[in-house]
Image (cartoon, rainbow, N blue to C red; front, side):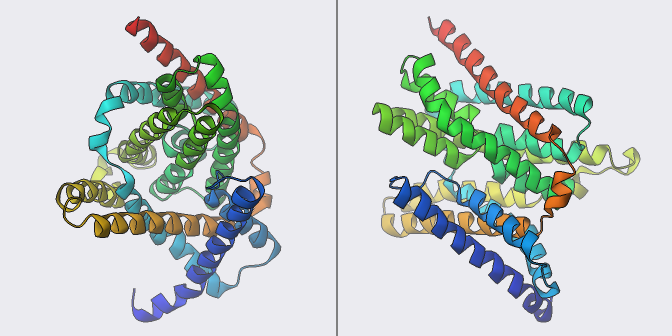
Length: 357
């Protein structure tokens, strides 16, 4: 892009940033002022896409905004995903990894199988099924936003999938802490594993863990749930190329198919950021502790801003009339997917408990 093309996209980018700021303000008012939490358990991204959809369906977007919104969805989104890698510290995962990783794999495979069967029955679009699957098994809206450009998903499919994951993620966030306390007899490890594998969003897992900690005085549960969820997030690196392969295999002549041509190279940036974080921890924590921690915090904050801007842009570009035409079937698939990952998680943990006994 030359400088004139960059100037063209600025209005749309600014609009997306304004909606991010507005969403963050609403989130603080609702989560902190009204609900009384120190940190709002509500996803700013969810508010951003809802506000975007509200304004996008009331007002007609001018052409000078559309290009910037498209740029935000395509490039700023990927930048946000790359920055997201800074929060992952694989070396800390060893303590729970022997339990969490097999549990996560079982949950992912189970949901993929169930959604595949449901797609055949309800005949929903394959791209939407992919988005619902990866959103429900890996890391919610982040996984959806990361996978969407790889499989060429339409804007209304992205919005529907995000609405699907958000709705059922919030329900599980509010219900599962109390259910898990009862079912697992207040055992922090098992409750944390369950919350970390069965709830969609990282923010929702953190909120559920916080709710449990505040209700039952168990910071260990919050720690286990968070670590389990971050391990689960790393599967994004595996699942995006897998879905890209499956999607393009069914849409490309076999002899012309090339994994190199469709590989999402921004995933390499995501992996690079994980490596950068861990190398930096080894070299800088002891010498430039404050500077390094400030750098990590700044990149984490940037990731949230970029991703939320992209979701606001998606909302602004979503036509609710088209969304309505998709019907109830994708939501039914999402609900069954949520129930499946919860049930499989419980069964797997029960097997682990019996193995320990």
